[in-house]
Length: 167
Image (tube, rainbow, N blue to C red):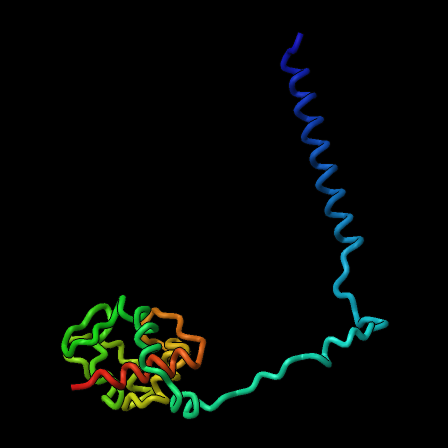
């Protein structure tokens, strides 16, 4: 019933059909390909631009003046996975005891990446705010893997809490 010649004819016809299909696809793409749509001929005004909210930039000093250290203690729970508050007790990150006003990269026994010295000398509340907002954006090359705190009130509350952890 099926000999070698019949099988060869069937296989050749399938391969030929596939070849015609692929060549037809290529020809259609070349024929109907558009390199851009150009400018829009008519724009419908929806009024979406009129009601856009303005983002008001608040100065960190104003937010920090009204910061709540108690709320900062709750925010610190995120930090406590890597940082300790006891002096000399390093975790995955350096200890944060007396961090506000302390020189950068001075936690005893912790191996720093060296990226912070290029950006900052002393941890002032303003420098801590910038670093906590986006550690890798503030000090490129830092080994801190945290993405940062986006809310300015949370950062101010956390810094106010850390300012209370002193001798």
